[in-house]
Length: 242
Length: 234
Image (cartoon, rainbow over all chains, first blue to last red; front, side, top):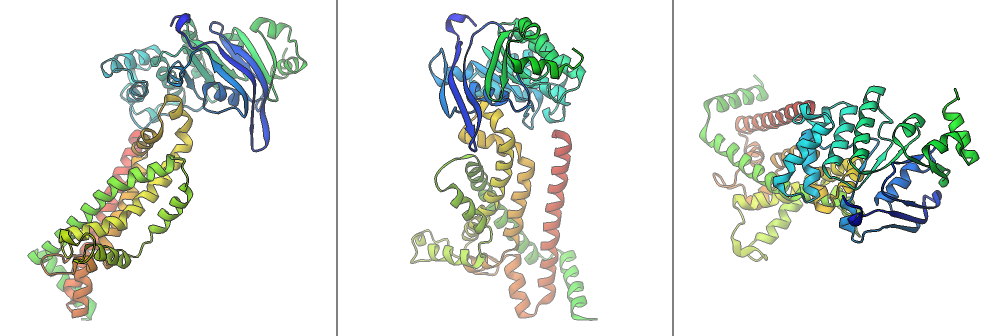
C-alpha cells in the first residue's frame, strides 16, 4: 500500500475518555505514522486497551479529536484491522471465518477463496481450513484471527495483548506472524505488558501510566534510559532480575 | 378393571389399528402447528435478533412486551382472530373463519412472541461476546443480527421447540377460530376436549398418548441434534 494513498498518519489531539464518571484516558496527544512498529506499554489498568479501541473507532472519545489523514469512514475502516486478546470466531469453519470477513470488506466473491487460502497458509493453518473454528486451540484461534486480518490487507493492524492467554510456544508462533505483518509493510500498533515481547517486536514505545502518555521513545532508549520515573519503575518492577 | 385401564386399552387398540379418523386428526394437528411454527420462526427470529442488536426508542418497552406476550392466553388470541376473520370483521371477506388457515394464523400469533423473546435473549447474550469483533469487521445492523442468529442456531432450536410445544398443546385458540368441525378443523386437543365431555375416553386418551409421544420425540430429536452439533462445532 503506497504511502501516498494511505490513511496514516493517525493524529490524536487531547483525547479524553471517561466511563461511569471515571476518567480512563486523560488527555492524550500523539501522532501515529507509518513505519515503526509501535508498542503501547503499561501496567494493567493504564488504559492501553481503551486507547486502542478509541484509535480503531470502537469507542468514541468523550472529548478531543481522533483524525486519520484520509477522509471517508468506509475507507478508514477498511484500512485497519484489529486482533483482540480473546479472538471471537463464528461457528463455522476456519476458512469460512475468513471468507466472512472478506465478504464484509466487499472483496469480489471470485477473489475471496484465493485470498483466504493464502492467509491460512501464511499463518500455518492450511491443514485445519475446514475444521470448525471454535474447536481449534487457543493459539490456533489467535493465529486464525491474524489470518483473518492478513486477508484484509490492512494498512494498520491493532493488536490488543494478542498473546496474554497463550503458552510460550503459541506466543512464539503469534510473534512470528506479527513480524511477517511488519515485514510486509503493515503498520503494527500493539499493546502489551510483556517487556520481552515489546523488545522483540517493537521499534518505538508509547508508555502509558494512569490514562496518560507518560513517555514516548525508541525501543532501545526506552529500556536503557527511561526518561520518566513511572517508566523506570515499570521496567524495574516487571523485570526484577535487572 | 378401572376406567383408566379400560380407556388405556381402548386407546392402544385404536393406535395399533391405525384408525383413519385418528390419523386424519393427528395429521391436521401436525400440519396446522408445524405451519404456524414455520411462519412464526420466519417472523420471530429476525424480530428477536433486531430487538437484541438494535438501539432505538421504546426498545425496553418492546422487550417487556415480548416477554409478557409469551404468556398470551390462547382463548384471547382466538377471540381476537375470530373478530378479525368473522364475516363482519375487517378480514371477513377472505372467508377464512372455521378453516385450517385461520387456525394457522391464530397459532402463529401465539408462537411469534415465544420465539422472538427467546431469540432476543440468546442473541443479546451472544452480542456481548461478538460485538467488538463484528463491528471491527464492519458488520452492522441487520447483517450483524442475522450473523448472530446463525451462530446461535443451536440455542434457537430450543426457542422453536418451545413454540411448537405451545402450538401443539393449545386448545383455546384453535377451537374458537376453527370451530372443531369434524373432518375439517378437528385437531388433537379439540378432539380430546370434545370426546372427554362426550364420554368417549379411549379416543381422548389415545390422542393424549400420541400428543405426549410426539412432543417427547420432537424434543429428544432436537436435543440430540443440538448436542451433536455443539460437540462438532464448539
